[in-house]
Amino acid sequence: MEPAERSRVPRIDPYGFERPEDFDDAAYEKFFSSYLVTLTRRAIKWSRLLQGGSVPRSRTVKRYVRKGVPLEHRARVWMALSGAQAQMDQNPGYYHRLLQGDRNPRLEDAIRTDLNRTFPDNVKFRKTTEPCLQKTLYNVLLAYGHHNQGVGYCQGMNFIAGYLILITNNEEESFWLLDALVGRILPDYYSPAMLGLKTDQEVLGELVRAKLPAVGALMERLGVLWTLVVSRWFICLFVDVLPVETVLRIWDCLFNEGSKIIFRVALTLIKQHQEFILEAASIPDICDKFKQITKGSFVMECHTFMQKIFSEPGSLSMATVAKLRESCRARLLAQGQCIT
Image (cartoon, rainbow, N blue to C red; front, side, top):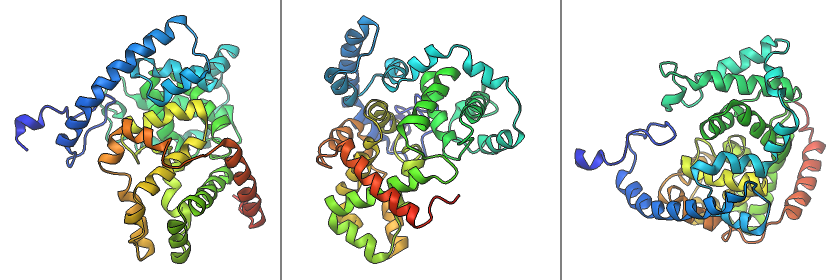
């Protein structure tokens, strides 16, 4: 590609991430030129919807959220739909009191260790940038560790909190959104035993066996544990797995509809690339294929991708997920998986 053509796509994206050397500028330009039209149309509709002040839970809002929340409204909509705004309003000053509480050197060291590992490709998190978001990230994670001592700090939470900070540009809002995710939306993902996380990986396995039996049979035949290929999808909620804009569109729905969205995304990725996955002949082979299916135009074209997650996996209710969680959790506990 000619240098002049290359320069049309900025080296740094709107969120501060550097685009990789192998970034497909042409494919991105083609996608974004049409997506921009969609974004403009959605922004007008959202502005009208939000004129009333509140963000009520309704079929209209659900439909709007599935079609994407404009960046300028995202923080407000996430705060309202997740219950984070209500929690913040009911607990004035609580976040700042957490930061002023007793010190916990072990917690502080664990968080500090991960700060430099959090988004090294994002200019806003570099120490040379002013203001550097590392301090904000540290505060949010420290406050949450004091707030939820049963969890403290767990690797993966740094990436989630980092995204929340980039969207809200507000420490306190990021804290309450993190609380909504870790405390309510994601059941027991980040506790020391990570039982909720292990349970949901098993739930995905059951869903794949039911909806995509050929892939389920292959995984069983090769002896591949689901945690080997999808743990990062769940722990980081697709951060650093899928393109930024696609992750944010997934999170729009996650804050509104809950954790079943994670299964919809995972099932769509697997179903779309079923034939490719079925070519795998070994464990390393299948691990490589699961990395490859998170790249390319299918995941970059976030608007089409989000339409697919609500059509491709078919019916998937929270009642179904809850029932599967119950049986998978019981099986893991019987195997002694509750031990840290």
